[in-house]
Amino acid sequence: MKDLRLRLLSSLAMIGMLVGLSYAPPGGSVLMLASVGLFLVYEWWNVMHIHVFRYLGIIYIMGGLFPFLRMASEGKSWISVMAIAWIVDTAAYFGGSWFKGPKLAPRLSPGKTISGFLWGVGAGCLWIGYASTGFPFWSALPLTCITQAGDLLQSWVKRYLKIKDMGSIIPGHGGGLDRFDSTLALGWCCWLRPV
Image 1: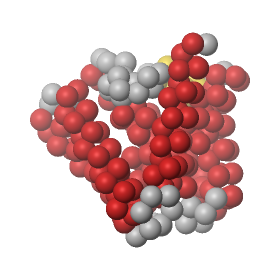
Image 2: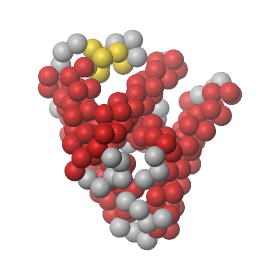
Image 3: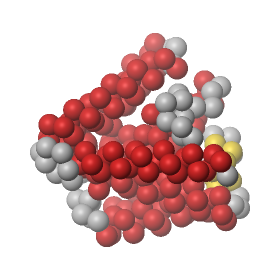
């Protein structure tokens, strides 16, 4: 329960900071997102020791963040698009915790369940249908699935590296990459359909 409280408090602090920055002039949002990108690259560089994967990871991180930088520089609502990943992650976490059931991919991430996956898909689809994300509603199902695939990809990398978290900067969450794993996958979707 203490871990849940810590996760909720740090989540609320992050959401408050990002929502505040979404109302900042485009330059402030761009600067903040670029800083996040540099930190994620730094975190990746410190955990990955195979050079080719270091560089591939940097391409993945920067490619996933670039669409949000572009939206912020153009004054578009990047926060409502980024919120897709947060809502999917949060709904999957609580749905899986409450309803449990069969595991989704036990070899990649033993804690993730099919019920959590379905809750994440449902909540993400509702958000895409409700908020002005720039994505058509028909894209909600593939987007929410790809978002969760980003989370599973991160779990696979952590299993490969034999680490629990990519860092420890965010109390209750681990590192920045642990928090932005789904967001980066979603960012790559924004390349396919510019928002």
